[in-house]
Image (tube, rainbow, N blue to C red; front, top):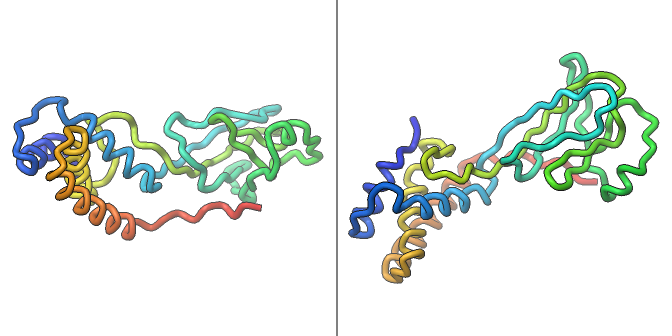
Length: 193
C-alpha cells in the first residue's frame, strides 16, 4: 500500500488548522522526503554490462552512496570490488596487470575501474539513493506514513514561520523519525582499506 498525498494534505490541514490544497504542501513534503533520504533509508541496485575495453560508466541519477560493488562473469559473482585508496589520477595511471577489476573509484557520479574489461561482464552496484524530487510519488513504504505526515506538518510550519506549531511538530517528527530509523536494518558498508 502506498502513501497518498491526499492523506498527508488532510492530516496537515487538521494539524495546522489550515485549508491547503493542490500543490501548496509540495515543498514541505519534498523537504521531509529529502530529510528522510539523508538517513540512508532508501536503497537500490543497478547493473551495468561492460564490454571489452570498458573502464568506466555513469551512475544512476538517484545515486547517493555505494553499499557494495560486485562484478559477475557469466552469471557467477566474483569478489566484491574494493574502493581505490588513491585519487582519480592515480587510478587512471595504474597499469593494472589483471583482466578483472579489483578496485573502483566513484567521482562525479561516474564509476572508474582499475583495469579495462578483457571480456564482457556485469557490475552490480547496491547503493543508497536520494528520493526523487517530487511530492506526487512517495517511494517510502506505508510504514513511514506517520513520519511523513508529522514531518510535512513540521516543515510547513517552519516555512510559514509558525513558531507555536514548530514547537509542537518538530519533536513529534524527530521522535517518529528516530523510531523508524531504528527499525530499518541498515545495510553494511564496504570495508574501506
